[in-house]
Image (tube, rainbow, N blue to C red; front, side):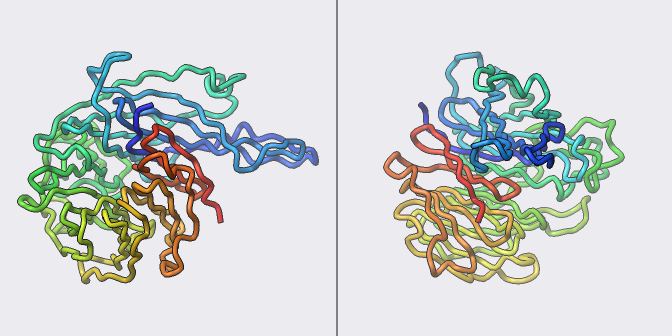
Amino acid sequence: PPPLWSAKFSPCRQAAISSAGTGAAGATNPPPSLQRLLTSGADGIIRAYRLTDKVVSATSPLDATAVKICHTDSLVGTSQTDGGLSLGYSALDVVRNYAGSDRSAGEEVVVATNPVGCVQVWTRAEQPATADDKENSGADETQQVAKTVKADLEFTIQGATGTTLAIRPVALGPVHGSHPKAKQRPAIVAAVGCLDGSVQIVSTGVGLHPGERGASGNEDKDPVEAGTVHDKLGTGSVVPTSLVWSKSSDTLAVGRKDGTVDLYCCSSDDYNDGSYRRLQRLLCHPKPVRGLTFTSDDALLISGDDEGTLAVHDAVRPNKTAVGLVGAVLHAHSSYVLDLAPLPDGKRFASVGADGLVNVWDVGMLNSGAVHTFAEGKGTGMVWGVSTTSDGRRIVSVHDSGMFVLYSAEE
């Protein structure tokens, strides 16, 4: 099978409430958890999977960590034909177009780019699936045929690296300069790295949900056209190799090929004004920074380079105080660090690398080494990507061999 390059757990996650059963003693069993996983790789198809916990009762021999995996959708480009060849998707991100608690609101927005900078956008409804639905239960889910879903929007970013893309969190509201005087509805935007060293902040063409902060009052307007550039940061710098947004502040971290990490934040709190400005440049890596993430509470910024080194920076309020190095791990991997992902407890994060390992770390115990190492992929090539579920129960890694592997992250 072709290599897999990226994986993301979707923030659209539902519980199959109506499927709760009764155990031997008459107690109600907890309903299974439904999660959605997306993977992308060299064959030009993004595969969407549904992960369902296997319910354990007093008479069931199933292990509590077991999970059923069903391939539900195959996401393809707007002009891609069934079975036709296509460039792979080298970068993938996904958001829920609503950060509130209403599970019937919003939709899943998937954005991916191929190596020549062609960006595709898909929107999928929050699945109303429960384990009792005919479509989703079935006698044997493995026999279900995945549905082909073509992209809703497509645009090309000239000069894009084709490997770096990150969607701006929708909870931050409209991107600055796009509201409310604009004649169009504010749209979800993504950061895209370019070969001239810049990062472009571009519209995905998908409008922000009216329930989001600063997005109401213009529901009847068309969203900002896909591919529209709202801002351009860092022109003339070294090529970006990684991107990550802070979820709580309008801050973008950019890892670069020369080992530097730049932090950008909007210069104004006014939606009508402001643009992104560089706040600080971190100089703690001698090699390209391909792994970059904030901890789930945005308190720390973690970076990983091609020498296998991890660095941890204090990232609290970077727009007001300098970001400082608080810890580092030399030889965290024996080769490139290729991706990082936080766990929701604010303490742990996962790293993957070219050595085939998946390491789990605790930011308070870095000097003691990884708290756990998964070596299932060792000797099978690089591990390109890693993602974690919002409840912190699972980690997924994607591999050169074309496989993805699920792990339990429960302590």
